[in-house]
Length: 209
Image 1: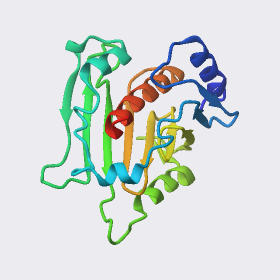
Image 2: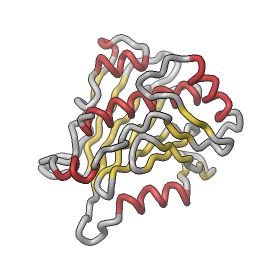
Image 3: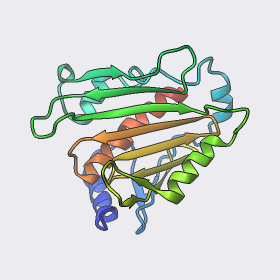
Image 4: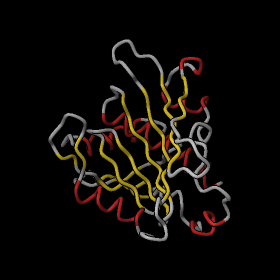
């Protein structure tokens, strides 16, 4: 991760109107904490227990109009591709938001919700999944370098991110993970701002806050 990134984040959130994501505190290590905690005072387990289907429709959770506004593109330029597996009880629901960028083919952002695929055999799967990401990092496609994740606090029970590979994860209890992945040419600080705005919209709509 770019060593200048923590400094650039401070500049970004000082200079822009980032009402959707709130102001942030950035450590020298790159860990980030939103000053406005999205889940403060919420009983996450109670909210999840009330849902008849824990996995939301990821093509509808964030409206196209909101997505277009955050990205600064025309609504008409955005197309959706639902990549949720067929069947009545999928382990994840996934949507790709795509638009044309002449300078970068296959431009798009993936938004995904994942549940525990084996709640009886491995109830701690969700927490272990995030822990493994933090401890082991991740290799990008065609890249042997291990990319480490940093903490992103204030949006979920646990959040992590890496701007080098454009991936963001938010865990809620031991039941669900939200994930945003970028295939764009945004600079790291701009990518982070977009991710936290989309993540905030996604989380608030899901939790009904």
